[in-house]
Image 1 (cartoon, rainbow, N blue to C red):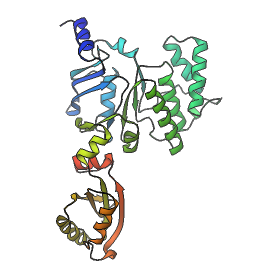
Image 2 (image 1 turned 180 degrees about the vertical axis):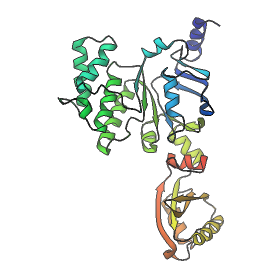
Image 3 (image 1 turned 45 degrees about the vertical axis):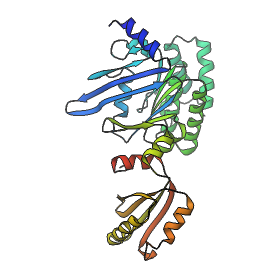
Image 4 (image 1 turned 30 degrees about the vertical axis):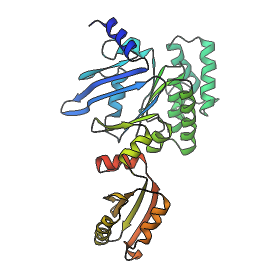
Length: 332
């Protein structure tokens, strides 16, 4: 089948699909970094790949952005093969990599303008775009070389460089890593603005709040494989429960007694024993709201409150989804 026929069928059968990943794999000697990933991303969608460090997120994004060639499988970006049509793909995408890539001996505006010129943007337009973006990210007007910037400022500059030529598809690999809370919220707000402009965004992250807050859909990756995907709400409903009670005990024997007594409470979905900073901790997932939580406390399954080191109540999150799927926390 010729390339033109493949593209025609892609356009006819997948009008809204802009990224089509088909059983893609990448091996490094004996390590399967990405192990048979298949995904479809719609135009204008913010699709997050959520997983711990080392799960394969960065390797996947490097293949999709044509930096790495797959060991097997393929992916199509707007109908173009990542194996054979790299030039066409580069014109469509902006990339904010996990590793900061800036020109240290250039100032902030010079970095952004340089990338703009690489994409054929005129000098006047490049200056205007750089000014707008740098003001948006709070780093405009700085006359020092970018090598003197803080890590957070460099990351925001990297994002501005990826956005200066208005890409159709934007790849963000841990874009808020190392940012303080205020700068993180600033970047999140701008990502939401980009969504409203119908830009397709692929977000690689291990930040559960980030994925939950920004994503239209999420795929959870672990050991190079996609283990679940759906909207944040769908994932929490399918793999989590409504609320979570986390109790740390002074002694293992006290944890065992409580865990056994939970079997008699009908609305308990499950309980998992985890080790957090050396503490004996029980994670209890249960259906229902605050009234059910109070009922648990009043049911008398904790005989002596002095046996408890710490107790937390929280709503179900994407981290609980990951925990229920893998038996460990996202950051473990």
